[in-house]
Image (cartoon, rainbow, N blue to C red; front, side, top):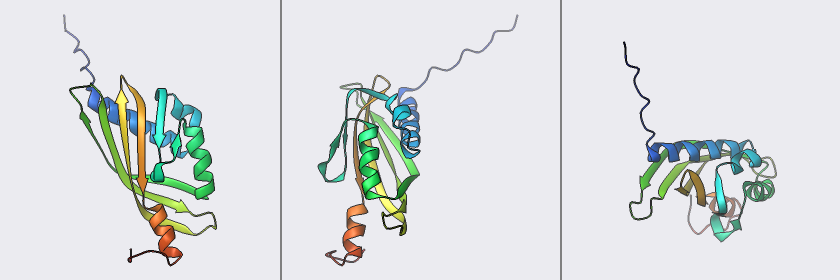
Length: 146
């Protein structure tokens, strides 16, 4: 009788990276309801400038005011397990591309999203990007050239 190989146990760090990437993909559609399936109760999202949201629907509504449309081009996703808490810290970096509210297209807008994944659910996200600097530069208000 031939033994069937057992499936390998899923590595929690690899799983957390996949959770974050799927969440981001759904957030870009935007599909706030689908993205919410990956969140823990009490989820907290902190955008650039310290703006706080508690759901993907809130951040999508904010982005509608900031961009005509926006997407992320993933550069890399890294993750590390915090052995003291069991949390997995996931870092997704890349570039935003899209159009500003006036229709002007942009690309190469750097971003960094930092996630905390606990028990297979996202509990917190911190988001940083260059949008404000790009807009300051366009308005002639940047302190140094980009």
